[in-house]
Image (cartoon, helix red, strand yellow):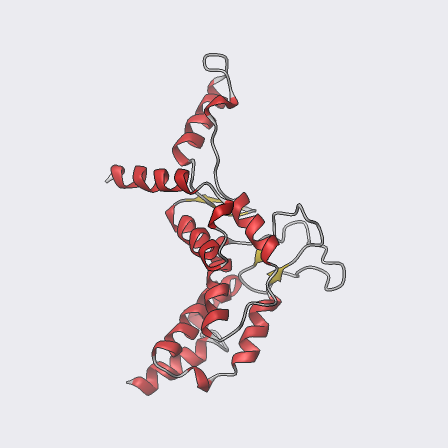
Amino acid sequence: MDNLLNKYFRRITEILPENFQAFDTFRVLILFFGVNGLDIMDALETVDKQVLIDWVYSNQIISSSQSDDRCGFRGSNCISGADSLTHTILPYDGSHSTAVYTSLCCLLALGDDLSRLNRPGIIRSLAALQIRYTASSSTPGRIGIEESDKLNAESVYSGCFRAGNFCGELDARFVFSSIASLYILDALKEIDTNSTIAFITRCLKIF
């Protein structure tokens, strides 16, 4: 049984089975399970770790701009990335919080020292995904219905995290991915942790 599991985990770190083709745009998630599965089975030495490390870094989104909040990792390289010399990010090429988390976990499991990370850019971009609500942003009683609905939604989701720059999803899954990534990077101080704790508490009350 161990040999079959090892063979399966090695397979998904290289070529995706036909029934996994739908995940081609998010291959790093499959790699995450393959690498950590081999690690649990004490069989990481059966793969070329440097090749996998280099592939993960090939999906890193780097910008020369100090204000760009799209830095991090994409799910795979099926989308053309930044120019290798100018680091000019294509218009719709943005990071995804779960891709950041799974990429960091893969790199650590493979023994990488994370020295090639664009830490400032990743931290800045993850922090920008947090929903921040301020009650003083509008004057009560003087806003339209549409804006009122928007403010109510923002107050409910205050402290939550969006999945990414071009993904409208926001829920506790991406809170985990973002918080775990920032913890790995020792950068929790860059976000409003109290509002995230409050959001998680509100989620508990729903049930």
